[in-house]
Length: 255
Ligand SMILES: C[S@@+](CC[C@H](N)C(=O)[O-])C[C@H]1O[C@@H](n2cnc3c(N)ncnc32)[C@H](O)[C@@H]1O
Image (tube, rainbow, N blue to C red; front, side, top):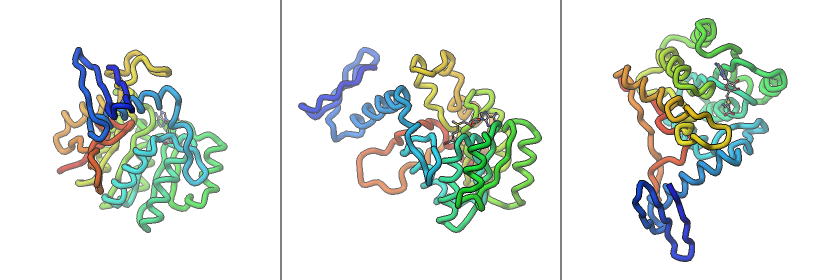
C-alpha cells in the first residue's frame, strides 16, 4: 500500500492492490488512510513510549486510552482486571477513572513486577483502589488469586495487555472470560501486530500469531461473546472508525 498526502490539492492518494483512489481531505477515507500510516510510523518510532499518566509511564496510544475510558464509564465495572502492568501507568489510569466515578477497583497482574515499579505503584495516591498480583496470567494459581478477590455478582471487565501471542491470549480469554458478566467486556489488546510484519521489533509470524487472531478464534468457539467495538459515544465529525492499536479487541459478553 502506498499513501500520498497532497496538501496542495487537499487529497490523499491510496495505491493498493493495483488500484489508485483519490480521497478529498475532508473524507473519512482520507483520514483512515493517514491513520493507518500514522499507526505504522508511530510503531516504528516508538511513539507510544512517550506518555505518562499521573506520573507513571503508560504504553498506550492516547486514542485507545480515551476509548477505554468511554467504555469503562459506560459499563461502570466493580472490578477491572488488567493483565500486563509494566510501569503501572495504565493501572493508575484505570484506577483514577474509577476514583472519579466513585465506583470500582482494579487488579493488576504481571509475571514480573519490578521492584521500582511496585514501589512507585504502592506509593501512588491511587493505590488504595489497586491490588497487585505477581504471576503468569494463565497459571491456575494466578487465576485463582484474581478470582479470590472478586465477589459473587460483581461486574468485571478484563484488559489483556501481557503476552500477545495467539495461543497465550486465547488461553487468557478462555480463563478470564468466565469472570465477565453479560454486557461487560474482555479486551484482547495490541492486535495491531497483525499489520506490522516487516516493521522494526516485529516477528515474521505476527500476521497470524497475534491477539486479534485469538479474539476471532475465541468468539468463533464461544457464541456467548462477540467482537463489538463500542463506537464513539459522541461524534460531530465524519470519522467513525477508531484509530487504534487494538483491532478486534473489544469482546462483549452478549448472553
Ligand atoms: C506491554 S507491557 C504492558 C503495558 C501496560 N499495560 C501499559 O499500558 O503501560 C506488557 C507486560 O506484560 C507482562 N507479561 C508478559 N507476559 C505475561 C504473562 N504471561 N503473565 C502476566 N504478565 C505478563 C510483561 O511483564 C509486561 O510488563
